[in-house]
Image (cartoon, one colour):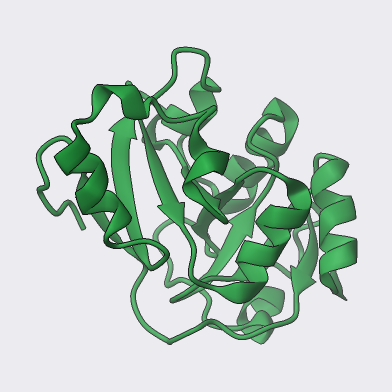
Length: 187
């Protein structure tokens, strides 16, 4: 597992690989959301069931438009979401019909977030689309807070190809999750 720059992380994403990177609160695992092979790798690394779905993280709302069906939301619901972005708040929104099944899991919705982390925002801008964002951990274990913890947890995992060297914005819990249709907090 290589500790890397954004240039190398971008190469890994473009080659259907998996990266570890800092977010607002914990380290995340990411890949190209349009690559079924990369999505399978993330699920295998995390030992996560496919039915749970995955989060998309983006540099801006426009990057999410091919994945989330914002037309099903009212202007007030969209305004409520946008008031929390960029930031560590994830919203469950209706999914586009053609969304990869591994992203939405057993749902007709998708979890989306516009990041406030400058490194992740730059990475999504360079990649020109969102990336998958799921906490860097094996399901059921605590999320990694730094690159050293990622290295230790996944030392025997060749599917994780690189770790972006940077710090999380603030140590803490994974992002809050809200339902965009109801406004109800889910996590």
